[in-house]
Length: 147
Image 1 (tube, rainbow, N blue to C red):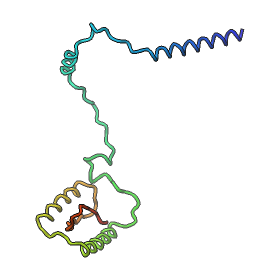
Image 2: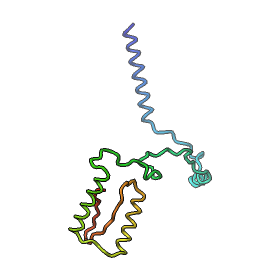
Image 3: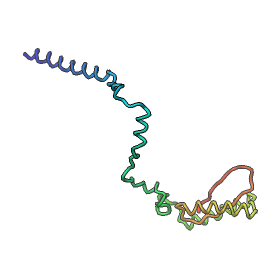
Image 4: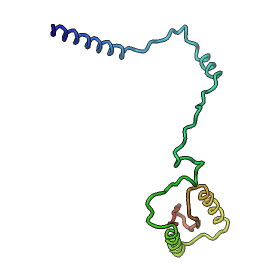
């Protein structure tokens, strides 16, 4: 009796596997060409209907929220220097760069570059003042010093 039950169970499982395999391999049903509207009518119908809009807006990650610039606490982590020490270190390094490099003294160029830079600073999360200088060089380069 148990042998018959095992055999019946095997046949049932094998039949179910064969049927599912056959269904998985069969092509999707095709629609009747007489019932399908021509492509021009389908385009017309889609143009007549308004585009569905998302009802809710997902809140952004606070670091990705452009509206929260200045209040995002970006860069908060381990600080080895206080802001005062960082500013002092930056001033010393800036004096060294000015001694070793020739700066452009054209007021139009320096004012333009400073204005662009200060706009970037104003729209950033920076907490220190920025002094922007232009070095007279043929190489394209930019760098920042601490503080």
